[in-house]
Length: 279
Image (tube, rainbow, N blue to C red):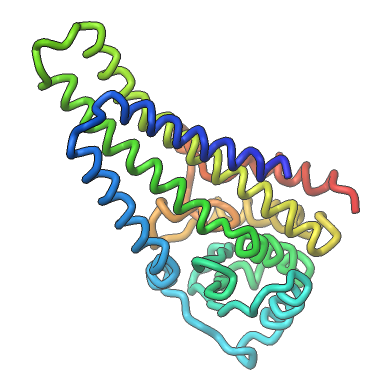
């Protein structure tokens, strides 16, 4: 419940930043065009993102005959979660990882890498899949799309605000121009930080929901420890870092400043929370 409230508050904060910076240049046609453009882009992304990301990672659909254990686990968990059976895919990479995608529970897909199937035992794999199916049940794809839409609009308006501040009318007071310029620089950064906070909040919620589904947080905690270490040794070699938030752990190498803008909470903290859960 706390993570859900936090997500709503963060989405509200994103909307507040949008209103604040939009007020600086309200009345311009660019504001309307930017809003329409961002909504169209994210509408397309929402409807086709699953197909795009599965193709990006060369994911191949599999049958129950090809992966009986994986199918058995997903079938068991979907019945417990009262979800429709998702499509199941395998990604051809040794990087141990998994993600769920799809616009709603009726159009969901779960993808596992070859690496995760080799690395984890059955209970750990079940913990990971419970986490991913919790993303589906919690409709995290929809929430992420809303956050991305707001952040994209804020970035577009900020660009227009900078343009207006630098090349706008000379009749503006110097303090107003400076205020617009500073806010137009800070707003996209604030929007990014809020968007990342939303992503991290949803990860915590999926950890919690997945553990409750299994009535045990330790298998997922054990899996996260293994995945974190193995992913650093064998980062994924294709795809795009912009999709890292989809995976249960970051599949790309992340060092230095990159860690400051991670879409995932610290693994140690996730493990600690899972191990401390009572059922």
